[in-house]
Amino acid sequence: VTGHRGRRRAAAGAVLVAVCGLAFAGCGTSPDASGYREQARLAVGTALSEVRTAELLLRAEDDGKTLGGYPTTVLGSSGDSLATTESSFSSLLPPVGEDRTGARTSELLHRAGEDVGAATLAQHRDERASYPALVHRLERTATELERWQEELR
Amino acid sequence: VKKFLALALGILTAIGGFVDIGDLVTNALVGSRFGLSLAWVVVVGVGGICVFAEMSGRVAAVSGRATFDLIRERLGPRLGLANLVASMAVTLLTFIAEIGGVALSLELVSSVNELLWVPFTGLAVWLVLWRAKFSVLENTFGLLGLALLVFAVALWQLGPDWGQLWDQARTAAKPADEDWSTYAYYAVALFGAAMTPYEVFFFSSGGVEEHWSSRDVGTMRANVFVGFPLGALLSLAIAGCATVVLLPAGVQVETLGQVALPVVVALGKIGFAFALLGFFAATFGAACETGLSVGYSLAQYFGWQWGKYVEAVRAARFHLVILASTVIAVGVLLTGVDPVLVTEFSVVFSAIALPLTYLPILIVANDRDYMGDHANGRLANTLGSVYLMIVVVASLAALPLMIWTRMGR
Image (cartoon, rainbow over all chains, first blue to last red; front, side, top):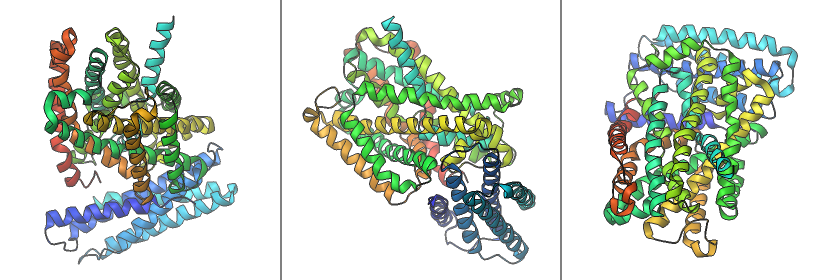
């Protein structure tokens, strides 16, 4: 039932990026190596933010601290945002020498989406017994995202 | 006792009514990325809004006329029109963001998509603007907005390292992984959020609605100089909560749900309920204020009868403008645009429009024909001029920074 704000935000961001890109680069070519790595870093940053949001939320839910439709809304937004980020990044063609960057980023984005999806499903089904394992899974993915973000700097 | 109670009520509503969707989102977002290193902007911004709100309130109290009413008369239709177009465009954008904010608050509690709440929110805002008395509207949402004090309680409950927070605020050092351009962009956005133009229009028009006179200048000043800075502390508490919980986790605020997360972590269900009430009151109250401000500015420029202190039938065009603005706001939101994104645009465009809003106020407040002995003194003029320079710098920097940083990404 939750919205598609993540998708809309990313779409609006993509439009702005495209306009700025055209304005400053002039001809709208595909990104060079540093541009591609910058896009990867931004995508990983977004994924990290959403995974950590889900982790904090699931911990709070496990402690009985949430109310009403709040967890559903927050997890739904995180899932939407991750789906959009993954799809936007996968549409970029990696320049020569950046295949590993593309593959690793895509893999982590996919895993982040899966983890948040699993958390959303567990919350929806009220499977509280699985929360600690899911929190651990989200934590592990977040740590890997952080490491990869550092490498991309 | 009655006078003291009125003063206390005024201050409390000024505190509770200070925060709107722009403050909520921008402060949380900035806290989650920059910690309290941009707290100085909130301090500078609240100083500016105090200086100009006091001026416009004094103009209303002494002349019995609202700001726009005098701007056109004093500066002529052309400059008045420039002021009108810039201010009204930003106020309308803010109105859209506030209605979106109400819908997002309702989505948080119900998990029903915000798009489904938008038409009902628009209808509710319009009904309140049509039917409710000005004082009821102002006091109710101002007092309910005090629920946002839960952010201060949450910050205390989180038990942060206060020394570290103070150091961040004092040194204003940006985090190592952020660019200076992004830092500057968010400084301008935060400044725009603190000095939103509608606040002065609403404040001065509200003075006329409540029949202020020269005798009320003292009360008005207490509301401004006590209420607004205390309201700004709420903004800092929101940023502080994001600094303590979201920044270390790497969460970058993009939704209203993330703004509430530190309160949920610190205080659980009760805290969350207060935060939700605060979100609702702050955004609904600000939606009413911005909706009225659109009507005020247009009606005052064209010299139409305006205000809620007269029967609706006698201020038909004023109410028609409010209705049309509400329809436009609902229509824009129903396109599916993200209200948080609208909010981000509204605070940056506020910064761009600031000089056109505040220069005329400074000029009118200096005019002895209108103000007599209550015209600006040396202190008010010095502060006003200094702030005008800051406002011009922020205005000129806003658009290039927005493009250069790709909206702070």
